[in-house]
Length: 119
Image (cartoon, rainbow, N blue to C red):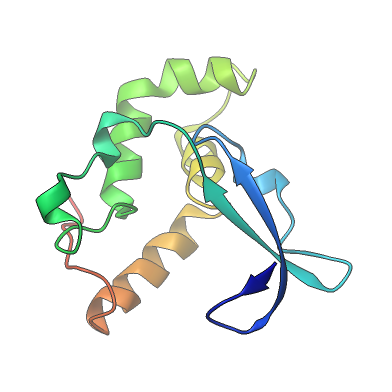
C-alpha cells in the first residue's frame, strides 16, 4: 500500500485493540509498518458521533483508565499474570506509552488534535 500522507510504500496490518504493540516492528525490509485497529473498542475509547472532531480517541488518559479498570483481563489476554501497569500501557499504547503521551501533547499544542485532559 502507499501511505497517502507520505506518498511512499508501507506495509499495512490490521490488529485488534488488545494487541501487544511492542511485538510489532516499526519497519520490515526497509518499509514502514502502519497498523490499524479493527473491531470494538473499550468504552473508555468510545466517542459520540457529534464529537468526532472535538475529542481525541487515543488520549493518554483513556489508556490509563482502561488499564486501571481491566488490568486482570489484560494480564489474562497477554498470558502474563505479572505484567505491570507500565507494561500494559506500553503494550496497548502503540509500544511506548510515555512516547505516545509526549507526542500527543505536542500534537495538541500544535492544534493538530483536539485538546484533552491529562487526569
